[in-house]
Length: 390
Image 1 (tube, rainbow, N blue to C red):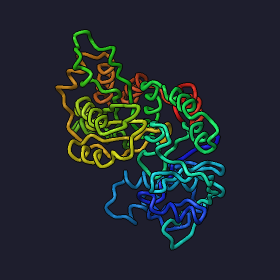
Image 2 (cartoon, one colour; image 1 turned 135 degrees about the vertical axis):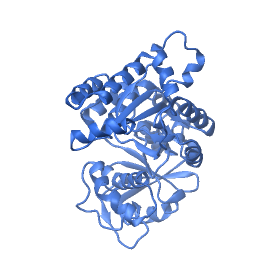
Image 3 (tube, helix red, strand yellow; image 1 turned 120 degrees about the vertical axis):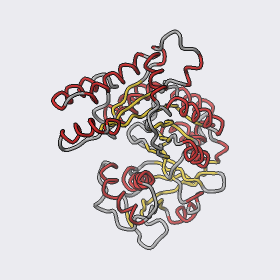
Image 4 (cartoon, rainbow, N blue to C red; image 1 turned 180 degrees about the vertical axis):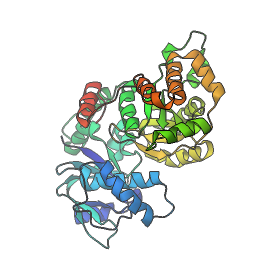
């Protein structure tokens, strides 16, 4: 399946003209070595090797920033296929359009040493001619973002032969997936990070909860267990420092955040709903690129993290700061919501279980967590069924 990606060629597209004249796209990310032979099919395997190299080359960067940088590098060097279409901002309000024509190659001692050959089209797409949805998605955060969901509109803009209004309507209709349909995808991602997660259904709350309760319920809660090679170490920790045996997470999930006003509303809802946990996050499937400065400010001020969700490879844009558990809010949620009460009840049994029964209690707890996908093929099939861009 042909993919369509927006590629940023340097900050603000500063290298876009050079790339167009040289018939290539490229990136740097401070990994100054030839990656030929070092590009596995899975980005996680790539990151495992190159995140430490990035952090050594760029002292002071967080592991999250290193993971994002290496992920984008892998995407350009390996994730894009020959025949895929790229849209690259010109820096002057339009997009250059090209087709990937080669596998990865390396050109040392240049600004963008990690490259792919591209055949550029004569056609340039003005940003103002795009639909609002495509403008927002092509302006998403990061060096590379997948805009394949807008393939019909992009092809219409390239050829000029289709009725753009009809195409935009088609794309908009395809976007009408339910927010809750993202939960299984996100919980699968969390499980890959060692976090067991459960959806909290607000509608199951007791009738005494009023309208303000929407600012109390998290969308998803999760827990990460400390793992030790010897069970006796865990037993000792639970006896001396039981809170350190687990870390609780809370997530507020949104389909998209398009502007500053939406960002603030969603962020403070996440702050209200998630600050009871050790780590609270705002998660969105689509985030406008020009919000990065405000997201960083809010994260620094209040400690709620922000995650850009994708079907298979979500990215932590800003990590959450650790907080102590707020037992008053936990007690309130236990009182009004059965899903949350079941989650905490089963988790408490794991924490309190003796060494001989910990595994049984943990398996019982996992049984109430959200089901997850076993493969990328299952994820792709699910996304197609739910009209979720893959």
